[in-house]
Image (cartoon, helix red, strand yellow):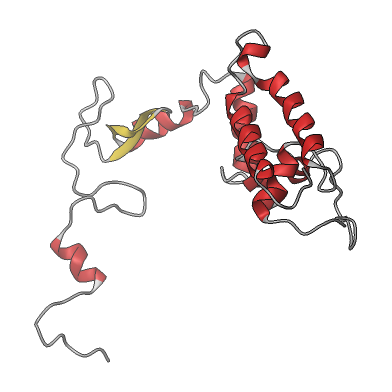
Length: 208
């Protein structure tokens, strides 16, 4: 037994329908509150059954009597005017309820892809390996900035400053606009090379 609402409100569904009869339909689909006349030409019967006007206008309706809505439904073709390619595409979507499965991928790979890198190992150059193992990066310990500078200059941490400087000059000839016909498309990379040489030039970790 349900307890009465102490505030005097009846929140039941049946009560709501009684207070708001608008749009109520019978089991046959007829709108009991419709006061329209059938939209079929020459028919004066009550239009209690609605039917969409077109496949691409599904929120605008004709209102017919029962006989004429049946006639309309028999002629209705949702795919009228659709090409075979469009029909096949719709059938493919319908197989998954128009919720296509998103491809499962490596989130780390997607993060690199946003930087324009297909393979994360590309950032390490041609000598990158998926599992370099211990000892594969044997060499001197350098500050992170100098280690990065060596990578940018494509040099080795065992080189002397004059040897690193040769690598620096070689890159400058390739990247500097005055050396390649005024092409400024590689200015950012050029700035990185200049920055890298500045790190090595003032370092005490490389013999001069």
